[in-house]
Length: 212
Image (cartoon, rainbow, N blue to C red; front, side):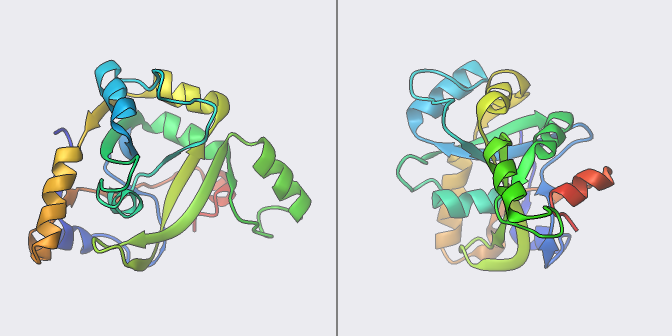
């Protein structure tokens, strides 16, 4: 597994307890996002290092999450039907910021959109939907900190799935191992991917996604 790991408790010492933040495993020029799929989709993605095949539908919105534990909450640590396989997808930061630049907020914010009609039109026409949701601890409890998730559709989903991926790795075995640790009552032994704050330098982009 390419991902660097760290203890859950140690990671929390380095992260903000509240506020909206993009948190991800990253290098100088790339970051990791997560998705969970049924086996047919995951097998194709890992084998081809791109998305496609008969089981994958580019006409549907597909959600990506840079927070590992948000993905664990969503997929039930790889136990929910249709989400049994967890993939770590390495992307260029330049493309991730392109995704952010094409995003519409999933909820109306009057300080970003002049009126609801403009927001509704933006939500209809933009190819990316952005949500700020509560982050979650390993047990699935909501935290004060907000995590980002991004829904992609249309051309940008095809660009993501077919051309921009740097690497796709199946981390399901790691997820299952850590699920067992969590359920053994030894949270101090739980390992998670090492994550840090993703700092956006573009002020207008930060404002447009309500990051503050």
